[in-house]
Image (cartoon, rainbow, N blue to C red; front, side):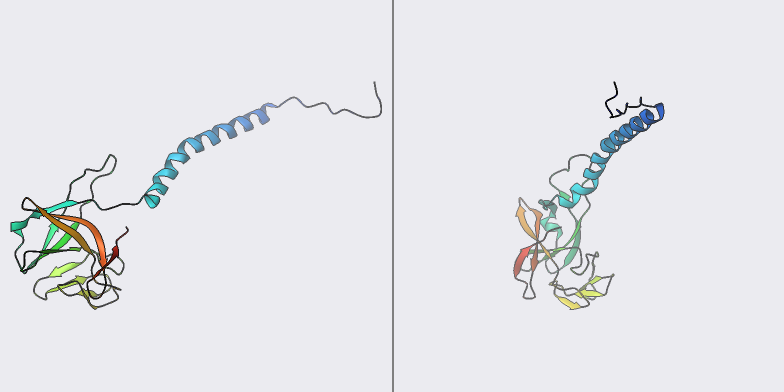
Length: 179
């Protein structure tokens, strides 16, 4: 039955070709099974917005008027597994009128932790020489703005720190902090 055209007969699949396709399919399945959770693990923290929730600072009576004290925050909400509540420090200044100022403990330049020096009455950033006065104003170095603050409230004799906000050079609130 030859009509001038030759029909190509398909070759039977070889073992080598079958093993190559099977191994490729298995490798793809393993990559998908492992890749999706790994991609989520690395990508989700970058896109998830972390709002600062209220945290307990301490009893009001432990903060003396006219002094600046270091305090470790105690979060009111416990994070869901697998995260652990981060340890966060703040500097608390109690004013003569009984109000408070709670300073975020990181420099506004690149986020290095700051230290309070009571003898010099200054905050110092060890990374690039940033210096702030007792009100958080920039005195020296590269920081672009004064120290960020936390909202605060007192309930039943306990001081709480809330969301972080930014201030301008006149110490007026100008915006929210986004980590």
